[in-house]
Image 1: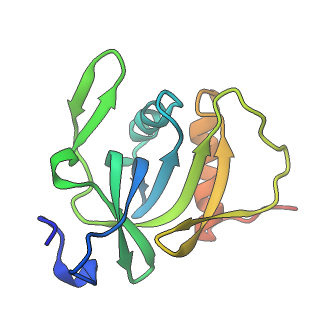
Image 2: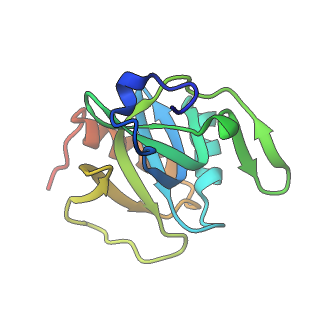
Length: 161
């Protein structure tokens, strides 16, 4: 059994739950998964979101759990409450205690091409479709765009087109 996670959430105890590489933050009870290769800005954008009131879920590796609202994310126990900050190292910080339902996946594209008016996209996480957007994490507006994308993914806001 995975320490710190209730067996009712884990489902099939014969195989370990799947993991995903990325950094996740929680905002208003919903997780956002930031994906990209090393150095793509996952932790940097997460820190800026935390500065805006989000909470760390996990950094580097996340466990994907089946939750009542779809996939949920939690860190492996050894990584709980840790985030890698380039130039500083591993830093302890407050983090979500329970698994957080996943509302949005953000593929980070530093300096890369991003469509002005993209069609809605989905990512497959734990066998479920989750809203997907692409963002340049180093743009000054990236945290605001992430908040807007999360509001759209949760149904709190709508796209005009």
